[in-house]
Length: 174
Image: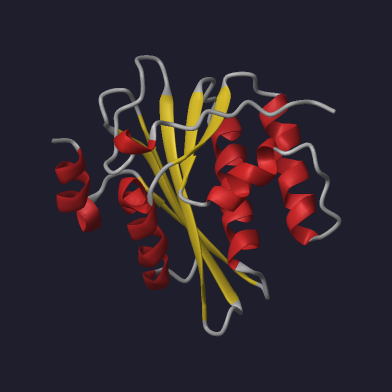
C-alpha cells in the first residue's frame, strides 16, 4: 500500500492562516451540508507564498452525504483542481481531523467515505509534492467563507479576486 504524506502543523501555530513556504501553493478547503443534508457545498482557496489569491472555487452537489463525506469530496475536488491547473507543490489544509486520520491510517474503510479516502490517497501518491495538513477552523476561515458564498451561486463558481471576502482575506495577511 502506498503511504500518503502527512504533515500536522504544530497546533499552537494553526489559529491563524500562515503563508506557505516559497515555491509552495497553499489550498485551504472546507465543506458543509445544507437543507437537511441534501445539498453539499464546498469551497477552496489557493494562495501563493506571498498570500496572494491564485484561485478560489466553490461548488455543490445534490447528495445525501455525511459531513465527513462532504469534506472528503471537497479535498478530492481541490486535488483535482490543483492537478488540472498544473500546480506542482501544494499544501492542502482542512479543519477535519477525522479526514486527516483516515488518510494517514493503513485501514481501508468499506464505505462511501472509504472510497473517497482511497481516491484522495491515489491522487496524493501520484503527486509527491502534495501534502495534507490539519488546521484549526480559525485558520480555515476563507475556505469556510467561500463555502458559504456558494449559496449565492446556482452553479460552481471560480473566484479570480476576492471582493466579497476582501476584508477577511486582508486580515489574514497581517
